[in-house]
Length: 272
Image 1 (cartoon, rainbow, N blue to C red):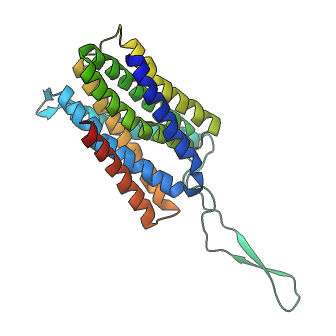
Image 2 (image 1 turned 90 degrees about the vertical axis):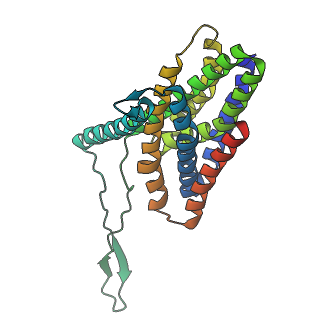
Image 3 (image 1 turned 90 degrees about the horizontal axis):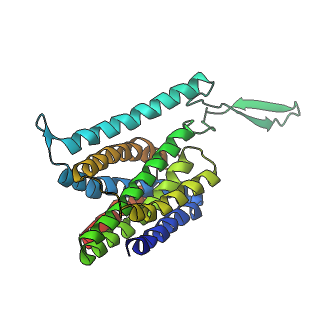
C-alpha cells in the first residue's frame, strides 16, 4: 500500500520538474518561485519537524538548530572550495567583457569604434556544476526520507499513513521544481537535470519499499532534516534569489518568491 501511494509522489515530482523546464523563457520568475518554495520548505516544514524530532539540547541550543547552522556553513564551504578549484584551473569569476560599438561616420572615413559602458555580457558568476549536482542529490536524499516516512506511517495505521502521504505528495511538486532548477542553474546539461529529476521522483517509491525492513531513529531523522534545511536555506538565500534579481530585478520576481512561500504555507496548513 505504501509503495502504491508513493507513486503519487513520483508523478507529482515529475510534474514539478516538467513545469520548471517549460517556463525557461521566464528564468527570473522561475528562480524567484524556486527561492520562495525553498524558503517555505525550510522555514515552515523542515525546521519545525527537525525541532520536534530532535529536541535534545547541546550547551543550551537545540541539536536540530546546531545542525541547521552546520548545514548552512557546510554548503557555503563546499561551494567556495569548488569555486577555488575551478579558479585554479583557469575559470574566472565576474569577468567583465568590454565590447565596442561600431558606427560609420558621415564623412566616409570608415568605421568609428566606441567603447561600450563595460556591461557584463558573460554570466554573472561562473558556477560550479558539481554544486548543482550535489544540491540535487541532497534533494533526492530528502525524497528518499519522505518515502521512508510514508512507509513508517502506514505501519502505525492507515489514517496516519494517508495523512503523511498527502503531505509528501503535496510538497513533492516543489521538490521536483527545485531539483531541476538547481541542476540547471549551475550550468549542468539538460540531460543531467532530467536524470536528477527522475532520481528524485523514484526516491519516494524506493524509500517506501525500504521502510518495510528499515527503521530510522527519530532523533537521527530530526538531525538530518536540520542539516539539510541549513544547506537548502544557503542555496535559496545566497544563490538562487540573488541570481533571480541580477539580470531582471522586477516586482514580478518578488511576487513569485512570496507566492512560493505562500504555497508551502498552504500545503502545511492543509496537510497538518
